Length: 418
Image 1: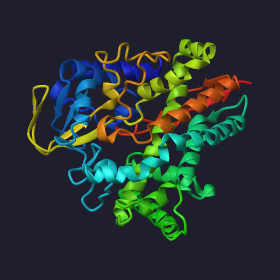
Image 2: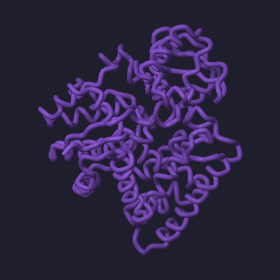
Image 3: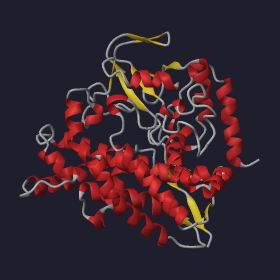
Image 4: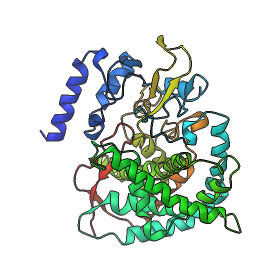
């Protein structure tokens, strides 16, 4: 028995034998070892709305089934995203380091700020970007080594998404990897290995703010308004007067949103196919399945494991009495494996019916603004892989991120067999 199998068997045993009142599905180590699944499966079956009294993040409610998550996600009046209540992650921000951002706001301010940046992913703009992305993907794939090991995360997933971010921000091309670093730092804690302390994390994020402030000043004074995200923010009616922390908050939102989700779905897709050779054979036999497969990859990966809300009043959900001010965590990673909503939910099926019916982009007013751009990037990558008939092989298990928010990969060893 392999070590990984043994670890998963032990987790399944622990999940079966632990009293429900001792369940804490927020433990980042569970996500790093990919052993969270049996815990969520038991909650879906026995306690779909579950209270955890003690965790490193404080007390919280878990919502684990598809339809219940949708109900919370679409009810912003009773379940607030606002940063003044704690925002969108299970981890409460420090009182002296608040980062307002439009995803962590309620209407009407949320709607006004989101409207400023949404034109960058309008259909006509995506159409213009398609050939640019296809050219970049082709170059990335053609420059990969043959018959030798390389890190798919670094060489493909990070490189493509960082190039895309640099374009969206009109960011200095040669320094684009700063965007990757800031994305990683923004979602890290001192246990992750990304930063050594909270002080270092804040210092690097302030470097990000200073760097982008210079770009803001250039563009706010430019004779013509550019079509990049910084120009949009600098000239938008509801964003032009943001203070430094709100500007940084929105930058972090756009960087993480544009980086982590696509990046980890790109890596997750290759890993999923490597684990399901029959599906890979199906794809090679019918490349027309790529578009459906992209939605299935995003569901199967669920690149952001959860979103958090805060109850604005005493409210009942599935017979559970949630009190005003309680932390309510929607576990997208669990809802996307809910057999009652998604048949054969634990299986990776590239020709799944209704593949777009998943929770990974959220629902309601906070549905991911860049979802179509993410899907387009994944689609192009797999189309170009199939066009080149690349014989891709995953050489070892991935190293996963230590986080119960970003469900991702640090490394994925791969090889192209020529």
